[in-house]
Length: 409
Image (cartoon, rainbow, N blue to C red; front, side, top):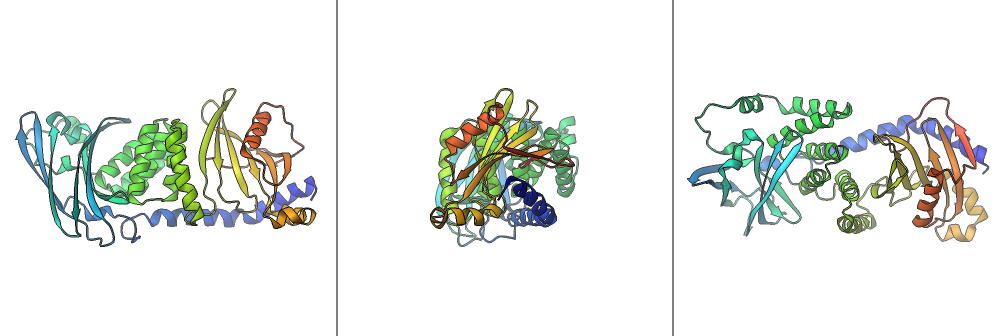
């Protein structure tokens, strides 16, 4: 297939598939997130089983501490193991999270519906929820757990007048409105405002996996990687191996420079891919590097999928964090039949033809072709040469109107 045919076929299939692809993408995302909500998945822990109505907190004075005696019933989920109660606290004010505290865990072996009690000592200065203090427990096992509401909001209320901050935080706002306000702020790029909204949603409904996901993505955009990691981890506690949050956690580990955690999660992702538990279009960021004043994030697609069949995607961001270019190693499905005729032995063994392509908002370029898949190290080096202007395009086609760059958010 000549280069002119390559570009014509790209435009033809793009026009045919655009509407269908968008519809499928939106439906898949909505379905995946819908499965994480309480009552829609038999395997995902449902926070609705631990609510303000079925968790009781009794408070007593212990000098500079409050002694909280907590009682609740183990969720009625026969197939889940309950052997650990994890207790954690923090303070959240605006976009600042601090005073992360891991309290001693409680271990046992409990049955569904069994009544459980435990106690925890909390410094009085850490016990006012109107000042952003949170204390939560999660009951289950390493495979997943059920989170509680903020225990500090279940304590007997003090008779002292509420402070102006308390009065503001207590203003009644329904969760649907909060979620909508948060999503509107996120789409407008107001990540601080969106994070504030979704923190309120999480405080009111700790089982909202979408709230954790959006809060994590807000934190990523604000470069608060520790908070992003914690939010993604909470989401994965609610539904282990949910792929949006797996991909998000991988990106957070990568951007935070946490190589050992990234590599360990990458091994787990490979196991999930081998078991067929990830969608065909799943991808994750695993490396980042600089090129002049630009930052590049590299994503891998474990499975060659779709008409363009991407393996690696190099997303290029300018100094203000906007994606301005993208380089891909791809294996165009339309080119495989002709290549297989020319290379029958390689094709029979599973080989494919690949190309190195570049995408801007106004054009598409091709920089190289490969008989078989090249190693990542070679692809990265050639991508760096493209960015440095040392590797020129062997063909280029301009768009009549601007198009989205692959991976643009």
